[in-house]
Image 1: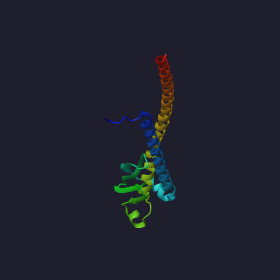
Image 2: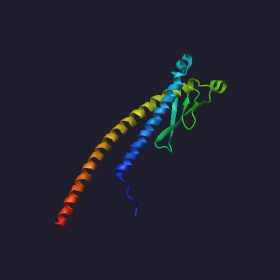
Image 3: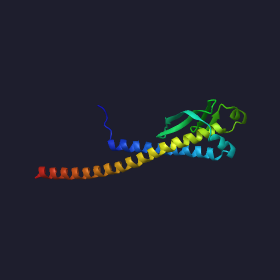
Image 4: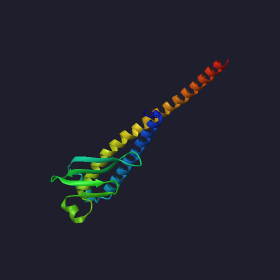
Length: 166
């Protein structure tokens, strides 16, 4: 026999995981913002002209619940450098350009990828935020209906049992 699951509990767990995903995406956006804020004016200016292509956002379901961006990678610049920003489990940056290889610090390619990903993750964050709000409202409505239904069913059962006793 297949164990039955409580649909309200399943929905509640899904909303919780979606909320955790929202928090994880927000944390990644915060990291990207800090990274961009740390750019010197000349590097930030150069970053705005860097071409970013083939963006890959690698995600994972975390044991704590919800999904999270783990790492973003892209081809950057005219030479097609491989640039990477890691969020989890340990934050880090990497680029195959000579500037990064020499200085071991964020280059214009890293800043360009950070700006591109912050924009994309913000769009995703807005979608998730709207979904969490919408699902939470629906869940409250369903829980209210379930409470009314349970009360009505209990009253009906009591009336039926009373009728049987008489």
